[in-house]
Image 1 (cartoon, rainbow, N blue to C red):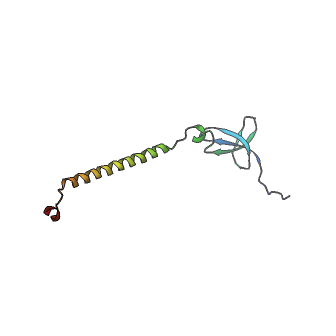
Image 2: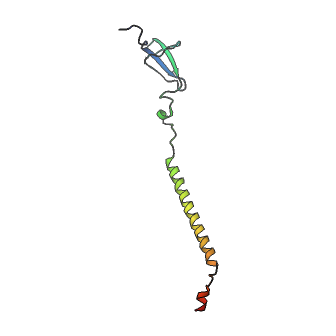
Length: 110
């Protein structure tokens, strides 16, 4: 077996800076800082920015995307477009109704 092939696997404390949450686990992470843990021993300390204690998904503060709102907006656009088409058709029908029909010469001779 080759020597110095694998990194040192040891106990390390990971501390969430935002939530003040810390946990002890095995890792190959290296750190110059140490912390005295609850059991009285000193372990290397790795500071992290986010963990399950501060992540919105795990804390229940996540934003839910409103997919129903998009469907409702689309339906409203379709309704408005249909109403606009109906108004245009009514307007066209009204203007054609106002114009008197021209009688052709063939009809007047009968």
